[in-house]
Picture 1: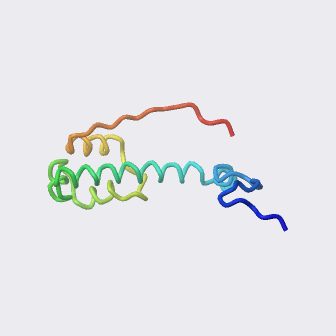
Picture 2: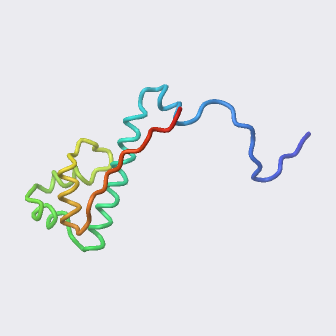
Picture 3: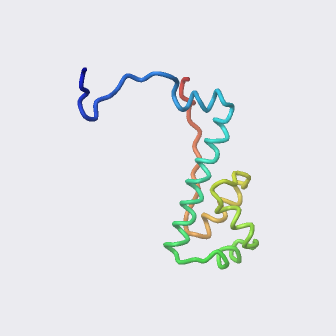
Length: 105
């Protein structure tokens, strides 16, 4: 019986996670949720650092607390860029969006 070295790479078989998502037809949805999770986390961190409550931020954005909750919900990808940018500005931040080449599959 052959023993494997601890932490040694084992031969890879099967598809990549990326190709799995593509085959399932959910790649774009998963990527959108991942991006939204990062944005929601960054906004929540900025709120924490500036000590702004949801109520205060909602008032500054001239919106409801429930609308702000949707903005901060990592699963809700149906939020406009304008809303994200206004929230970032109210927290002393700015949004930078970049389009890059898609990786070859």
